[in-house]
Length: 250
Image (spheres, helix red, strand yellow):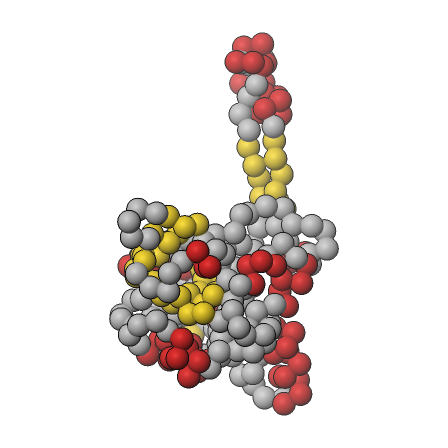
């Protein structure tokens, strides 16, 4: 079965990325590993093959939202539908392996969010319970750019609810976020002084999961494939990194 990797690589970010959003990884090479082995066990490099020890990597900074990741309802609000929102380790596993559909939004400008009517018009087939809906914006092309956070059309709260009402519990996008870019929503929220404008699709009061920062959606057909997107089992977390893979038919 052909496989398509829909996950961005995890690597250290440049210093221009704001600290809360930055990933920093420390790499220890084979010589460093040999030094660790000598310090821990008294085994010198002369007793190791080629004088080399293990290599290791340590996350010095790595938020649960800093890579291709799955958001849990707990990320959006403390309560959803009047009940305590679920954390990432509390979501059903069967949400994360299901048929997928692609919704093409490559014609939309940054901030030109998809309405329910837009999604209905673009969805390639009738949706079924637990389908995984992936919005293809093409913004993964900018994933290494400092202004990646400011790109993407976004999906409206009404479109999110439309998908949810048709059984979709996991929906994703190949942009930095599911909502329209936050700086645009912030401007509108301050202009109107209305609650519910900023982060509207996240805080739509629905128990759903969303995948952000996907890539390679252009390699998928609009339908006829499976998606595996299991998040790491991080206790009480609002999100978790995931290796998202599409499984295409032979």
